Length: 620
Image (cartoon, rainbow, N blue to C red; front, top):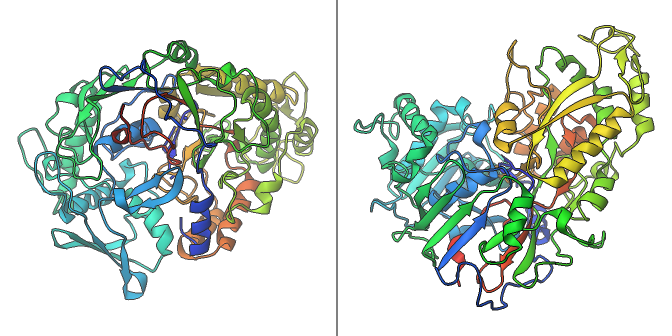
């Protein structure tokens, strides 16, 4: 799973595995064709046509800043993943032609084979090469697994008890075969979608402890610490990305030509790429923008960006509310671009810090979270600000596309927008509600009707809420949230900050320095690299991407059930708990990007529901 920003959104997020029928429905009913649009119309003046290049607009105030696929939570984003996947392929490729699921034609390995009661997993590799001429081998897979075992606390995709904790042994009986033995039998679909998805094979060229000293992490877990220290330092050294001997060894269709920390990134084809489609243009460029308005000024000109996006506020008329989120409405840029709305398989929320020594005790009270959720006017934001490009978020399983996984509890929304309900939640539990003033605790204590443990008399409902800058939609949504909260005496001190600043602050912490309170990066989570919408990575106690450090034994048991058992019942039990207990604050799940594709650019007809891109398929 990965965090993503709202804009062209943060990945990491849309991190599958119950009954086969449910999985097939998910695949069949997911994003699909975006309204039957096409990019086939010719355009002699298409931006990159004459230079045989493609320029891609990055989301506002969001730039790539971590090249190593072994990412910490602060850098676990859709934007970083896009860059990484262009050069370093994961063991399996997820999502294609606008649908969810695994695409084996683009994967480094064949479908896993299960034996020994499901506890032995045998993986046969396809014949791929690294750009230095070496083959992608089983030992490259073991290299990743060893690193993950040794440094799991530093990887955002880690959840305690999950991969790699559940791997008893990992061996390479030959160069093309990996054999994993697990501690118990798991749901095979879940294991494929949420465990094997963690693996990115790493070349032997990365098994180094310095620029000149070879490491042995690929064969010895105890040797991984020194290799991690070296690679981590290299990943932090952004100015050297394009010239690095480490990062230049790739197995994807692209390699870096230039990299600037301000977000200007240029890729050129990896001519040694072994996959089914080599890059077809001379260069692919990522172009940064501080705001969506700045980007729109460029894309409106129609002569610079091949793939951009139109800010929601620049859509003159809302599209019909009855149309699916990924279906295009009127496109004011149709003379130069085709509109392909991009809807990610994920959900939008922002975390609250349960370990904050001052306000954490307030956040731990269910009634407070119920009150705060009740002042989020999701329907109003979607219809007015988002122009109907979005759906409500009522829990962790996306309401779009509809599938048997979505429970009735989520569909009915247990906490619709209601100032009256929010007021009652607070006043029934020891608070003196002062509309447009400051609500304070007047009944401290732990009895029924009291404010709750750790909350002092006179403590005010006043909080700091930084949120990602650059998107007028998010600005407006946050202003609405602040205004609604004020009606029940909750003060939200908003501060607009760059996306990377918000995500680097809102991380798991504890102790006296754990002072952040709330943090909204604007787009929530896309299910990647855990592609099935279970919660082990986000909400299990101690999980690497559990930003707010939420912990609940009942939830942990429900999450475990989704990993072990088939059927929609266990999934819906988990999501119902999440919907009713609101461990995070749910926000509208906006269309990730109102993507504008230059007329005449061929090969770009669908968006990946997990946030990946395949510019090697695009050409003039």
